[in-house]
Image 1: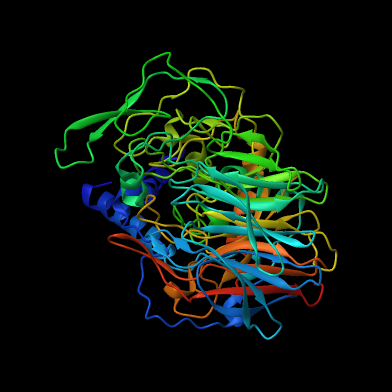
Image 2: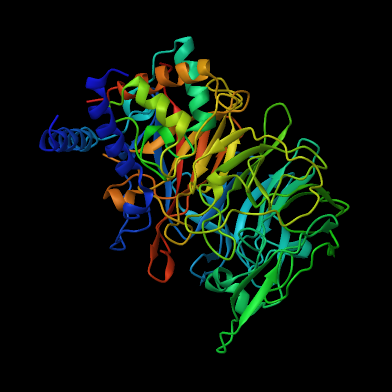
Length: 486
Length: 118
């Protein structure tokens, strides 16, 4: 380098260093804002690629999480009945009339969240998250009769029973998220609320695993504050030993399952996911899931872990709790500031983790999604993923809101592009931007014609000093369609 | 160069960097229209999706700073990608070849120059 360029170059590098000095920047998550209780809806506040349009179809929903369509193509949404911050309401299945009027078909008990809905034959099927009593898959008739098909699924922790989606084989596919962030029950789980209710609950592997015996020390939950040690796949306060064998079982944590709705046979499809919240079948019949990545919290925090879009291959282990997107957590890039480098919890991985289909935004909460099938909508074969948005500072730190939009992913290349985003000088939820656009998209599903993409918008969830603050009645259902080709 | 002149140069560089980072970083297709569809831009977009967008989605601020509103010269981008900087990891030639890096830079420049709709 020429000498006369050296000083300005070094100066620029200094400036870049300062700009890149993560620790110096104040956090600025999407939920770190105020909300006066009134939400407006203005399609003009949502930017889409040329030729696409959006409208709000129904509003006033409370914690909606999924949409499905009956044989007549009429939309039905589920309200979850539970939101982080431990707010309990009634989980419901609602028919959305053309006018936007909501008609209740079924109402559940206090065991939400209802995390999604699928239509198969004459029935609807709902994944009941199971925060209090364990997860269930429910069959709901057109008359609103609710019948559990499977129950007591191990989903009373941080993450729940998710889906379901109907497969081309006529079976139901659903998932169970993990109890913990990264395999160790800790004080962060007490903050979620469940650890004090169920002090012995923990993650369960789907196959036998041998542990390395790493334990993590935290104060006890009681007033004593005595230090306790907790190992992987163990209850809080129970240590593990090197070489210890933990027996696998089905159902289990962090896994995808197949359920025959006629014979009620439950089968494990794949495991080693963290929270595989979204499930969808591509036009070629392959099953994909979106996995919410590790957070920078708890006894074993992970920094900078992306969310992931996976192709699900039967029988494989996908890496949790020791890998992210096919890479080992021991890489320096995943070490949380001020923390030691991560070591594996499992001594012998069941298989080398697969490579992902796509890597998605860190803390974006990539959730429900669907694949385009109709050339009239365009982008056939691409996935349209709803990103619920960050829950900073509960999950880590970001410099600006992440998520709060829909992205389009081309599975063959892994290319990720914005599809539906709020207008404004920066990205973020409508509440933070002060307009009538998207708040927290949580699910996306094409109607049977394939011409309309319905987006379930959970509504306002702030993140305050005591954690998440969800706002009832602020959810919505949007419709996106293509009016003209560019 | 005297100490004072060196300090002045550094301060100007820092100020310039700060000022150039003040504009909005929004350049994605819904906001600013599609990018040119050349091979290097397409390949660069793919490289970006695999290695960069999880921390800099659409080139905007997220867990990492925005890239779209900073006129970084090519050699600095290469330096930062190969060496890492602060919380940003480094990307070796095994992980990101020279050809990939060339295409990535082409894409970054196309994204930076993608003007938002009026």
